[in-house]
Image (cartoon, rainbow, N blue to C red):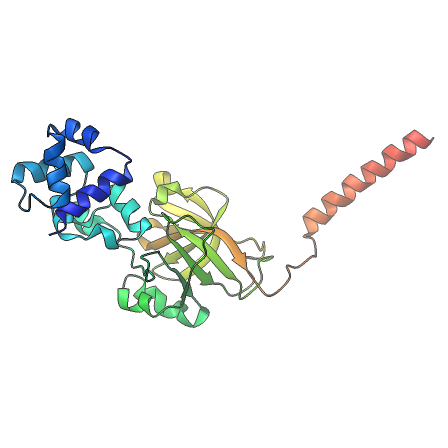
Length: 266
């Protein structure tokens, strides 16, 4: 049973003293200390219920899950209320991997694994086989994954680029005009600019940066995962050519500047 160590971890993560927590729970400080150091090995049901309500963590999780072995991302998910024992099958469980220090890995989904990811995204055994790396400049309480993209629909981001993304749990947080990697039931992984129509139409509009591709709607029931674009890596330099509309705009601005200079000189 991991109850004793878990309540200590949860208290320390909230930067609360034993005196403060004990007072809010109606215990003495010595009683709370006995719970945390394991002197009280079998807490009463009333005590379990009190700690569960206080930390907003299920009793099953407090007792069965060794929180010392959870990553920062996993702990933050618990503290946000995403407790599998509380939410059950309604929770979208994200399969992840951690390194020897319990830090969340950044798994890499190369093109050769793209087809398999469509069916194996929730399979821990499939995720474990993906290449991984660490990037210390990223936040340790968020989940990141890297996907290799293909095609020219998101130019000027080059074909075969690796896109670093952050896991987005709440799809209502999709922001219009931002780029996302979205796993869909029909197409698999797609990299597009998204427009949030979830409240009105229960769908997301996906648009390519390349104007040659038409935008299209994806119903929410077809979406499996959403990953927010953070950055990308590529061995190719971006295409320096300007789009037609941008070029015309710059020419018009240049013409205006020339006319202004002429009026001063005349």
